Length: 287
Picture 1 (cartoon, rainbow, N blue to C red):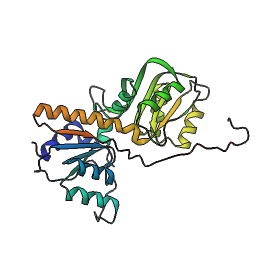
Picture 2 (cartoon, one colour):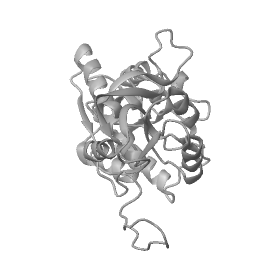
Picture 3 (tube, rainbow, N blue to C red):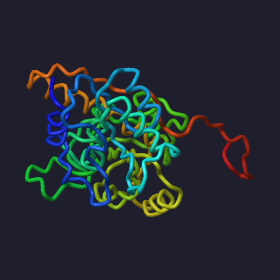
Picture 4 (tube, rainbow, N blue to C red):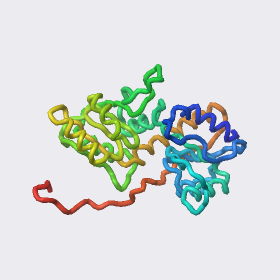
């Protein structure tokens, strides 16, 4: 069986930490580098539910997309939920490793996994990494559909193919407009509107779209080709990466003869748990 340090080296080769954003906190949070690793669990969020799942599973290592301590800390006391996670992991000899923005821009990266989940054909990065001579790394992806769909049909495709969450899928734009090209970005994507507009795509699928950026994007598009916006839950747009990443580690394990048992958590850690459709209609609003 490989040591933790060997598995971490493989993970860092897949998602080099130096490619993470300067504000990010990636890498190994806890774990003894000399401990043997037999079972690995991939998940989006390093929350208590995932730590408990790893213990039940007998995992030696959790790999998450989101950091546990993004802004640093001066304590890991168990009187706070993050400290309880650390205590749970250390008591049960479970290591934690984070691949966040370094996996967003990787080749393949988070948005490649999102495109694959939607059965889209990736053409190029939305925001290319200028340090990549091959032009395949970068943030987001520009994609094509095999056959044109309406905005309504494309939104329904997303609702069917992405993991179920309380939010579901919402969209803005003419439901009967035709979609042939799509920009996708796993996680929060409303900072990418300028790049999306420059790409000239028919639709943009991402998560965490806020009122003002969406309103400005729609107003900017008036008089030009309309841009349809499809908003999914943050967790749902990044969960497909877990399956992709697990497959990448399994390939390394097979090549190295490690025989790792690799798992993907199906626990929904999206923070929203339910919703009601609004019943109130303001005067003149569509029913």
